[in-house]
Amino acid sequence: MKTMNKLMLLIAFGLWAGIVQAQTGNVGINTDAPATTLEVNRLVDLSNHYPGIIAPHVSGDELHGKPYDAVRDGAFVFVTAKASDANQTGQTIHVKCRGYYYYDKEADKWMPFVPCDGCGCKDNDGDGVNDFVDPDPADPCNPAQQPGYTGYDGTNTIWRAADCDGDGETNGTEHDCGSDPYDDSVQCTIPGNISALTNCDSPVVSGNIIEGQAVTGVTATLTYNGGNGGYYQSQNLISTGVTGLTATLPAGNFANGNGVLVYTISGTPVGNGTANFAISIGGQSCTMEVPVSALDCETPGAITITCNDDDNKILVGETTGFSMTGGQPSTQISWQITKSDNTVFKSGTGTSTGDITFDRVDTYTCEFSATNNATPAGCSVPKTTVATALLQVQAKKCKVFMLPNQLTEFMCHNMGADQSLDPHDITQPDAWALNGSYIAWGRNHDMYSTTNDPANGFWAAPTATNPNNSVAGWNTTSYAPNGAWNNPANQPCPSGYRLPTIEDWKDVLKRNTNYRFCFK
Image (cartoon, rainbow, N blue to C red; front, side, top):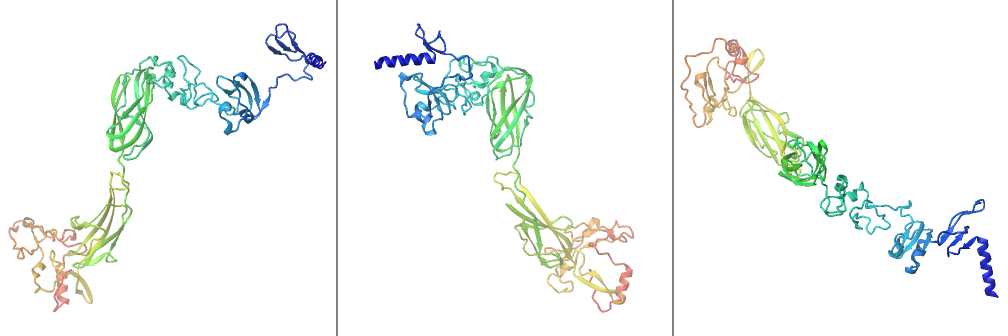
C-alpha cells in the first residue's frame, strides 16, 4: 500500500508539473512532444512564471573540497563565489569568478561555460587560447597548433615576438607578409629589394651618442629608394671604428617605392669619432656612419689670484709672488709671468709662484691656468680655466728741483741698466751693470734688449760674461732726422717718462747745486 501511495503521489506531481514522458523515452516539461532527451519549454502566460533552469549553487571553495570523477563527466553547477587563491589548484584551478562551470573528465578540471565573462579572464599571450585553459598564458606557442591555425591575435606584441614554427621568422613578420606562423616550411615568399640606400654617410640620428656613456633611446634612420614591398630579415650589426655599439633592425617589409629603415643603437661606445656599420640589405650595401661625440671633461671652477703685495705694485729690484685658489677639479695647474712685450719672464707649475725678484720696470702679467682631463672618468676633451693678474714694477724714485720748492721725478738708472743695483754706489762689485744700453740720437729701441743692433743705432748693456761690451760696427752714416725725439711716442723711454729738454737741464743746473742727479 505504501508503494502504491508513492507511485500515485509521483504521478500526481508529474501531471501537476507538466512533465511528460513520450513514447520515445524523451522527457518534456511544458511540451507533449519533447524532441531531445530533455526539453524544457516556457509557459505561454508569464505573468506568474519565470523561465529558466537553476543549477545547484555552490562556492568555489566548496567545489574544491568535493573531488569529481569520470562518472560525473559533464556535471554543471553555478559557482556563487570564486575559489580562494589557495584553492585555485587541481580541479578548481580555473574557478576564478562567479558563473556556470562544467566538469571535464579529460582535463579533470571544472571549466567555465564562458571563459571571459568580465571577471579578469583574458588571452595574455595572444595565442587564441584563453588564460583559463592555457597551460602557459605567457607562452604563445603553448599549446602547439597545427599549420593553418588562424585563431591568434596578430596585434599582440607577445605573440608577434615569438617564432612558433621555429623557422627564424617571427610570428609578426610572417603574419604581416601573409605567411603561416605555424608552418616552418612556409616563409615570407617575396624577397625584398631596393634600388638604392641614399644617406649611409649621414643617417638621421635621433640623439647624441657620447663616448663611454651607455646609449638609450637612440635610432639611426636610413632612407632608400625603389622598394618592392618584399620582406627583409632582422639585423644585428656590430660597429667598427668606434667599437662597443650594436645597430638592430627588426624584420619587416620594404615599402613599395621609397621608405626608411630605422636601426636602434645600443651599447657603450669605446672612444669617439665614427661608428661604422656594414649594411647589406635588399640587394644594396653601404657603410652607415654614426657620429660619436667626445666626452667633455668638466671645466675647472673660477680661479682667484692673490699677489703678496696688496696693491699689486712694487719698486724695481723688490721681491714678491703670486698664489691662487679655486680651479677645481683639475689635473694640472701651471703659471707664467710675461712682460709687456709678451715675452715670458718666469713660468712654473703649482698654485704658487714663490718669491720672485723683478729687476725691470714694466707691467707684468701673471697667468694661472687649471686644466682638467680626467673628470668625469673617460672624458677626452680637456677643459681649462685661466685667470690673470697685473703687477706694476715701478722705478725707484729719484727727484730734483726744476721749479722752486717743486721736486720732479727722474729715472734713478740709465736705460737698460740693472735696476736692482744701487744707482749711487759706483764702487760695488757689479757697478759695470749700471752702464746701461747705448742708443743713437733720434732712434727708438727696446733699451732692455740683449741683442746688439749697431746698424740701427743700438748696443745692449754689458753682461757678466762681457762686462766691458765695447761698441763695434756703429752706424755713423745714417742718422735720424732732426726733431725725431720731439714726439714722446718716438722716444725710448718707458711709459710715463720722456727725455728732458735743454730747458729742463737748465732748470736742473740752476736749482740743484752740490747734488748728484738721478734720473727716473
